[in-house]
Image 1 (spheres, helix red, strand yellow):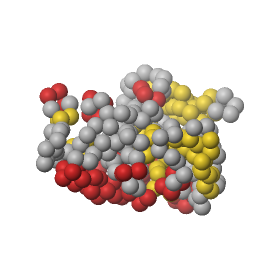
Image 2 (tube, rainbow, N blue to C red):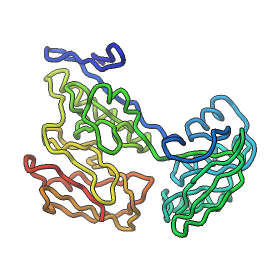
Image 3 (cartoon, rainbow, N blue to C red):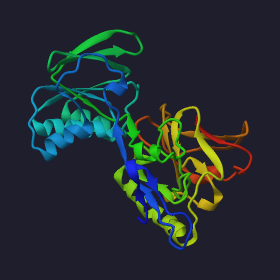
Length: 324
């Protein structure tokens, strides 16, 4: 809106003036591919991500046959199970590197009971076997090192989200060191004047309703930029993910940006915690500690009240948010 992609896909924004223009990046996220997950084996047919599977079935009406192994036990993994069943396939196993279910208990136990799918925790897919078509997956037990081959004709890779950050990267926006998505403040402003980022590009991945709230939230910041030229993040302190967390968003603390949508700091846990205890450090000192009335689990976003950063003093250095 009022700006766009220049030659070669690079972002342009008109600086200064009564109408400086604005660009909102909302390119979303994608599931990590087989190659990016370092799964060995020859290239064979029958390996999909959830997105590819759903397009094949729901948009093109494709029928699938045979046994299926789903890699991941996130909410989207159970969605893949339902899609496989609709297409005629038989899901036989969901596998996860984590010991605990990554989805909420009712979804996990209800899915196992209603759909009759086995769930294997603390396992990793080491290789996909087959010649032309999948014939099985080789699983490694992360606790014992034992290897097992599970016969199947289909493999669906779910979760393990990566922002579609290529356009943001071409614009040389300051990025989160882990996700490589653009770092934003609470107003969804990036490091480049007039360029904003919203949705799963900056928090990969949250539900569609939260991404939609980002769209509503960023509108006020865009208005401020267009009318008053206020639209650059990075003037405060970086907010970094510490122990127990993979990423946090927003990744800049700028008091002029106000509070994020729903007044929440979003974080992605790397460990499970029945009681989520969040600790904030700045300059090597603990400045805040908060026990949340909900658990933390890999595979779903942890929502932390933004007020946990109230004691941070801008100007005293980067902020680290950890899960204990």
